[in-house]
Image 1 (cartoon, rainbow, N blue to C red):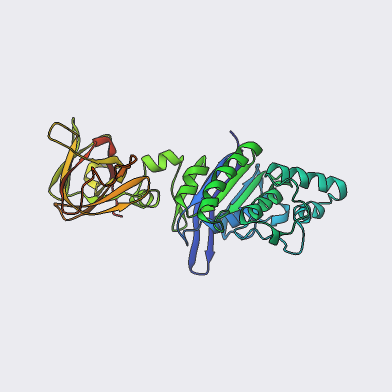
Image 2: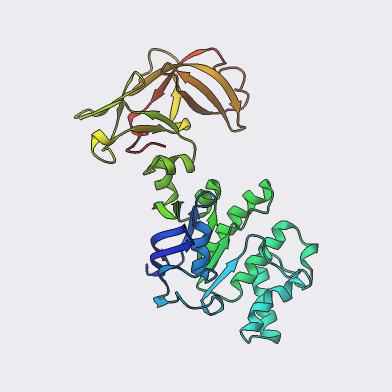
Length: 363
């Protein structure tokens, strides 16, 4: 598919502080792309430059092939949905939605019809004359979305769109917003620091670090194949262990870590001698229940504590090397207190070679 947004060497400096540093990115038409990262990583600044609310220090922005680097926000074919929704409290819902249309010269019945269609689309039929203070948080969020789509822009920019909602409504709106994107077919670019939002809603995720792109890929790629400890630690939970020695042979990649001999599958991310760290997701490790079982790798330790997570039980194990290691097990109904290791128990942890991540850098 053709790129609807193209960023070439885009940078933004705030005096001596570099907010965005030479970003190159292409967003396909109709894609749901998320910029993910912690506060201060440059994701919101990047979004605001695409929208025209921040002027780049260097680089270029193209929308549908047209250079808009110096074009003001109102002349770009994008619409921004702000974190606080930015609804006019003194205007009813319908007027909030038609406001942007009227500024484009669309008024009267034509504007009202388009606003009503947008409200129908987001499931708010019949609320045209309500005021923002009469709506729930989820309804206000949908009004903001209706206002963003009513102008039929090529791109909708979403700045932490669900951050003001409570946890239950937030989960519901993640799915609804994704469904809305699929129905509209408009390109969505969202900023969030919430990894779950990024994984649930996105076609593609761009993880930002210190103003640069740390990794760019599908949610599955980033979770299953993180390229750095930073990405592995930001998307999901990861056990990190140091690598003391490494050797590659026909049986895979042989590792020494804290006195344990381990084997990893595949090809290292760089030259074998550069591997300094390995990572294992807690749900990719499991406790062994007898000598008859065999996995590629077995490490020994002692249970420190167990943490109830609802769907899973997290067990904190202190390995013989002294490192803490997390193991997450799904909890079948009624299984919490009957079959799981308790603090003080000695345990063996099995790990498949395919589930060991290799990194050249430290976390």
